[in-house]
Image 1 (cartoon, rainbow, N blue to C red):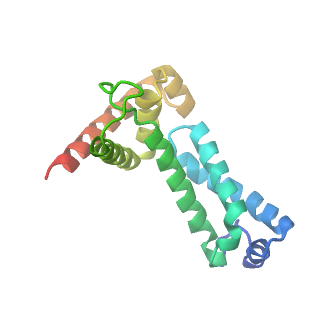
Image 2: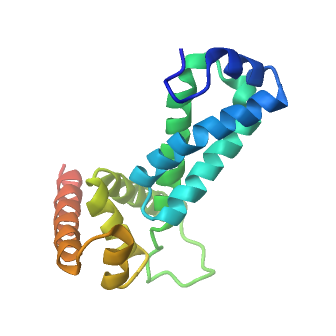
Length: 179
């Protein structure tokens, strides 16, 4: 059975069968849940909205492939999680010592991707507010006051969350680097 607030099993089945009104109703009912989940996972409100929209587009295109009507919520949350992770990975900047336009070896590229994966995973493991502060401040480069205002924090609280996030990230990456 679908979760409360989501679409009924009957409505989902009709959407899976291609009924346009049912598809629209499922999308409308899912949006608030998907958006709320994305806000907790993504670094910024813009990324959250983009991830939610991407998840809804995927739902629209692939609802016919959904196996069980009761799996809608977990399927959507998995799509949102993957989209937020993809967006976080895109934020990882390539090394500065490589000139633009120069090809790196396949080994270097694989190592860079593995490092980016570790960093993205370590950032994802941070508590929600710490993750948002870290990404907005250190990755996106927003000024501290802008980050604090966007997240509804005082400047001192934002700095405290940023310090804790950097410390946890540094310790987490150091632990994963040990053999």
